[in-house]
Image 1: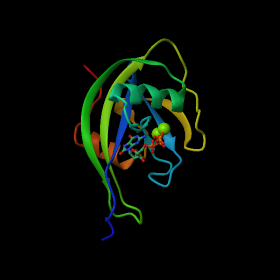
Image 2: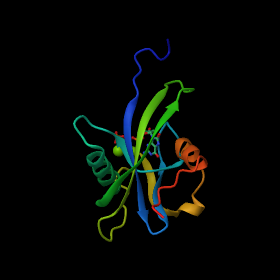
Image 3: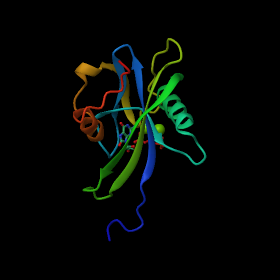
Image 4: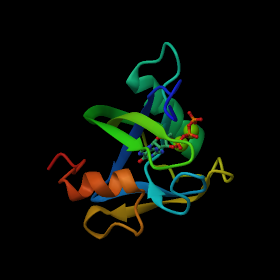
Length: 142
Ligand code: 8DG
Ligand code: MG
Ligand code: MG
């Protein structure tokens, strides 16, 4: 009965790639506070995945992106919470449209953005991202 009226939500997250590095931000949120996660957010009605990715990255980091590609979809559940959530997460990758630095546009939700080597990711990662990495997820094309 605790799940009554609950519906899964659709989220798009973006692996921004620069060389061998990926862009991560430290969350300020009741879900995964202070862990490192990808930019992204909820799909709005009428949006394509590409439009959502472009909008969320711009809103959260100020970055303009290009070469957007679909990577994978995961079913991320947080059921053992007072308020349970389920997110169907579309993971994309993208590159910077030109030379730009990320800005922390939503400081109430993020402590800041940084570039991290895939082989030396910061800890702790946001739990669903940690799980994906452990399962072999790798956003790089090479
Ligand atoms: P919005 O209001 O801008 O649409 O959403 P947001 O405020 O940017 O939400 P978010 O927390 O960034 O993303 C929504 C949910 O997506 C988040 O609470 C849990 C889920 N999610 C994952 N993995 C990841 C990830 O790597 N990054 C982000 N940002 N969210 C993720 O399951
Ligand atoms: Mg977000
Ligand atoms: Mg957002």
